[in-house]
Image (cartoon, rainbow, N blue to C red; front, side):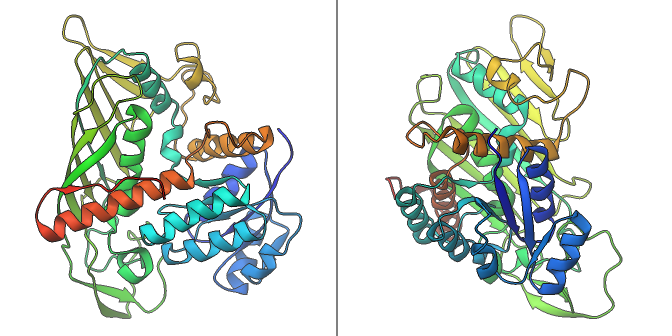
Length: 394
């Protein structure tokens, strides 16, 4: 692959994950930007990076940088992505792409005019068995898809003393559990099945209307540490858990008839579940089930013969899935590998230089679709009814 150079904006939980994934994908990382000069220097030293950027302007001005990875609080995504495209950089942005569909639609248009590659990091698509499931749907192994069920559950916000910027609507948006992790599930189901959600009915709940905020920021997933002695109460309006029913329309990737139904359960207050995404597809010929806690196993359900469990093995996978398997069968791959493979797809597309071709990575248009869907989910919850999902090119 052509040698590209990237820089990462964001030194919290996910920024260093990007650094590792980029290096493993063969992309040089020039430096990192934190919330302050001190955080930038600390992160650069810990990660062995040459540059600790003092400001976003300094990062944008670095002519050695081809692409910027944005891994900062959600409210900053729009402005930072817009500036990066204007500076002629390719962009890989963490989800959600923006705070609302007006911003995300604008970013889609800006990316289209810029001639640069613009991606949203829906990395879960790149588990090899997610791609294997997609290929089985496409070739008709499941037949018509009747319904889809699944969940994405965690426990890192189980206690009222658990806190992170994501719980604040002004930092992360009016939806939290759905937007933060539920959209990963929704994007994955779309990527695997090709189904488009046409209508939603949602019931959401905030368990803790007041949480105890430490006097000082807390990193994501650090809740098992002892709670800080000094805290202050803060009002919370974002949801801790919820259920979303979905009506799908259009044609799945394999061309079967539409009309499937779905149900998503999302929670950040389920004790013992650290980071568990599950789905099950029920088709007229077969069923498929997968769980992120056992990512190297794909369950295949049959009526007329024994069920199967496919273990991730390049010798047994479809060619499209094989291309995203890095190790032989029995050598397990997991969460960090999905970043590597997502970045390989992104930079491989840039190297190919054919942006008219169907993109091999989740685009800003995909990110916009998820935000439109989130807005319909929020409206459904607030109005207590089924809501149609607005479609149309941004």
